[in-house]
Amino acid sequence: MEYSILSNNLKMPMVGFGVFKVTDKEECQQSVLSAIRSGYRLIDHNA
View 1: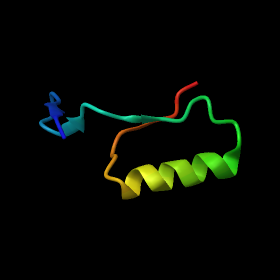
View 2: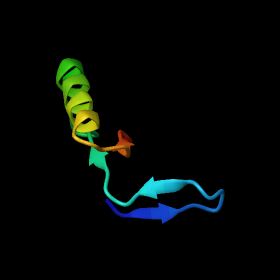
View 3: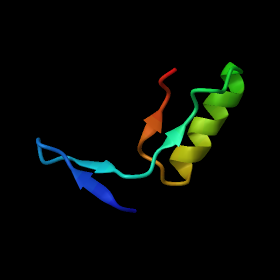
View 4: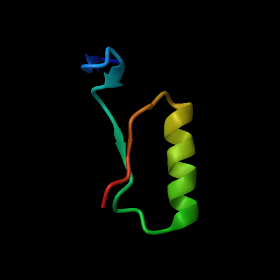
């Protein structure tokens, strides 16, 4: 996975997982857990 180095020297993944259109709470929770298990570390939930 590619990362960008932030001004505070932390790494931020260049690829994220978005859930902003998921309306079902259970589906959202399972999707995020599955993404984390698959290696995602950037979760975008902004509406």
